[in-house]
Each structure stands twice: as structure tokens, then as C-alpha cells.
Length: 144
Image (cartoon, rainbow, N blue to C red; front, side, top):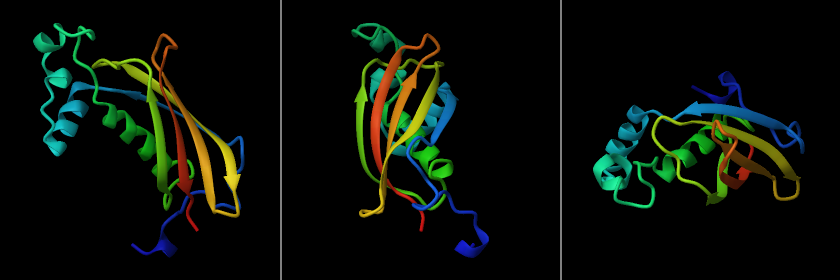
């Protein structure tokens, strides 16, 4: 499919500071096992309830890179959207995320750098209790 037939996301001239997006995502076991199968990651902390019960977490947790994938997917699909490329990503994981939890990710464009042709997007994810589980800052090259 050529770019002329494809709807690209917001370009540098159309994206602006303050643009935002909210994405709500339930993290199901099937999502976790798909990720683990693709990456061949066999960390028992992600899958083994009996092992996780012996740790400080008490329950199996969601792999952090799976949460990262939700962020990059939303950027690729929605803000700025198709044609975007993540060039830098800084993440802080404040709380573990357990299987079956629903998270709300809030994306806010905080900087548009026309000289460098990049935008900076701040991301916060919260669980159903409004506990912040992660924050991130993502440097993105929007489509041209």
C-alpha cells in the first residue's frame, strides 16, 4: 500500500502542544502469554503464581515491556498516528501491574520542536483505583 492511499497521522504542522489522547486497556492473561511466546521470555514472575507468591509482589506481574508496547502502539495508531516513529523513550514503573488489571493511559503533547522535527509526549498510566503505575516521556518523529 502506498503512502498516497494511506491516511497518515498528524504532521508537525498539524500537531500542537496540548493535543491529548486517552486509551483504556485491559491486560488479560492471553496478552501476556502472546508476548511471552513471541519473545521466548520465561520469567516465572510473569506466569507462575506459586513463584510470585514467594516474592514481594505476591502475584504474577505484567511484563513491563508489554506496557511499553501499549504506549508505542497508541502513538503509532493515534497520536501522532500512522507514519510516526519513536526515537527515544524514558519510562518509570512506579507500581507492579497484575494480570487482569485495566489501565488508563493518558497521552499529552508537551513540546513541538519544529527545528528538530520532533514532538515530546508525556504519558501517565493509572489503574482503576487511580494509582499511577507508570509515567513516560516519548520523543516522536511525526509523519511527513
